[in-house]
Length: 147
Image 1 (cartoon, rainbow, N blue to C red):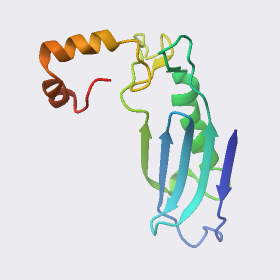
Image 2 (cartoon, rainbow, N blue to C red):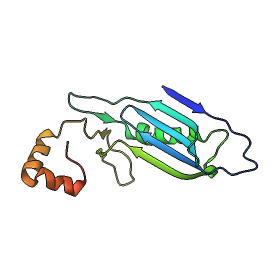
Image 3 (tube, rainbow, N blue to C red):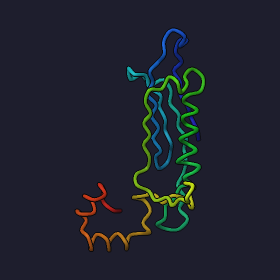
Image 4 (tube, rainbow, N blue to C red):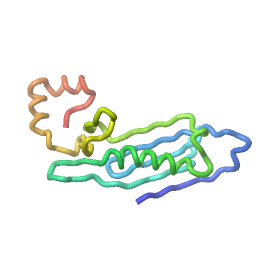
């Protein structure tokens, strides 16, 4: 499901807006917002998606479709009509935390991305690493606990 909300402004002929654009790729949706420098939400857009559970304990997403495609589609939806990329002075993008996505030499995904914190197929390996190096040392090295 896709939804958009817009607040239309007067013609931009007299002023050039300084807009902020933000996109968040979450587990179950990609959300975007276009905001004025004064914190007024001018447009928002949401694309809902799912996760794939090909086997018990596995959780994956199609990186090309969801991570890249939905970010592109959300930005296009936010910048359709009244505002354009020329009006945007800053962009922030957040996404699902540390996931594993093997790529080829050209940066193309070789398989669906494995979702961190949901997928449990590496439980034995995580226990082994924690036992060998210590949870605190791994946290300090990577900035987050292995899950």
